Image 1 (cartoon, rainbow, N blue to C red):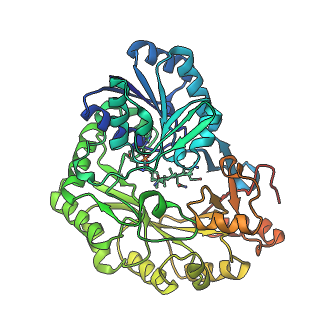
Image 2: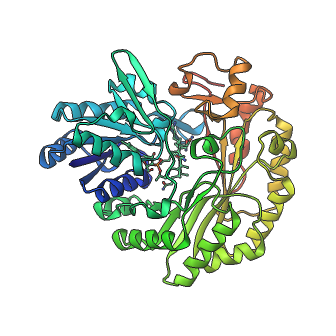
Image 3: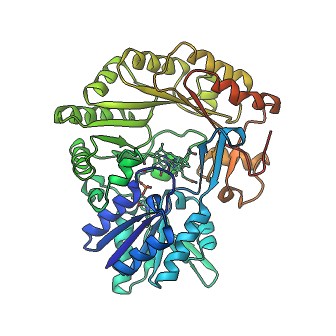
Length: 444
Ligand code: B12
């Protein structure tokens, strides 16, 4: 079948999801094209032209984000909140205007809100979860005229009914198709200074109270072999020309042996490829590990500290201590790796005292690439323990709140303190602050 995959994301990031999806559909024998809205200067004209030119038999729409916050010092509290749903709706309407072939939706931003999305977009069918197996299966059913409502992860509306099947995680990641970087012209991404991204595993063994990933991807790790990661890295480099690659899995260094094996494989390849990770866990980051990261070409690592208050780390169930945060910062500081750190402020129990505790620890370090602070914890899904707590305490009242964008801010943070906090943080060298507002009209 002729398959058009439309990536609706309008914030700068590599379209990794659509690329893995495209690879899988092509491996199953379909003719695939990708349209990335990120570069569309005239969405209407360009998408119309693509549909008319290619004449797809099915259009797959990938939803990465529901809303996004970006730093903008001219915006209230220095952060611009964008509701990205209207953009996705505009894409669906444009597709509808140009063709009546089936439209199917999926992607990380779709997973939590499948039912809301279908109602909002006026569509009847989507797939939650990983697409490598489910999407080709859907295409097979579609081509053969079979029942697509038995595809794992599918969500469907019919005559007022709504069905949702549990997604089925891909067991063997090594045997899946490579991300189809060859289907993209990488030039516009390079101009926007975007680094291509691949992932090395799925799953998360931790259970942080604010994070949905272990429920989304499973607690058991599904690892790609180092050889497979190398094959993806080579393929990505060959088709983007980029000597840098982001490893976009969560907690890159967990499990530690897996991260070490990948570093060794990249080091032994020795062809100058550099890698980065936005999510290094402050545990087991020793001098030896940092040396391995250096030797394997790590050009950037973000240490996801979140908090250095002992009490907050326990409350958030982060699974490491302030002493481990210190040990990780010590080791990274002795290395040549350009690293940054990130903090998340505002989870239950956060108070001016716990923030002071975190900042006191950071005072002992010069962090070369700065500190990224997010104030306000996103509430996405009932997969987060925090959402349960927010419902119990009456912080969240309405079922539809999540799809409209809700943020948790500890009630122990007085407004007078919050008013001063962003400026107080921005005054520290290298600190960048994103202030996620609890709701649309919320102000201090
Ligand atoms: C890595 C990551 C980042 C990296 C991006 C690095 C990069 N170059 O890609 C960084 C740190 C920059 C980042 C930033 C942000 N992120 Co982020 N990020 C992720 C993360 C952890 C993985 C995404 C990924 O690439 N996965 C690997 C690819 C292969 O998987 P995938 O995209 O899910 O695609 C698969 C399936 O979804 C499916 N699929 C995809 N499309 C389609 C379409 C169809 C039709 C079908 C059937 C299937 C399908 O098949 C694919 C293959 O299995 C996700 C969480 C998660 N685990 O999903 C959050 C996530 C996407 N991020 C999120 C957010 C909000 C953000 C920010 C807006 C945060 C902020 N600043 O406020 C920014 C925005 C950045 C941007 N410009 O887009 C949210 C989005 C949810 C929402 N409600 O909007 C997520 C889901 C996290 C969460 N809370 O659960 N992020």
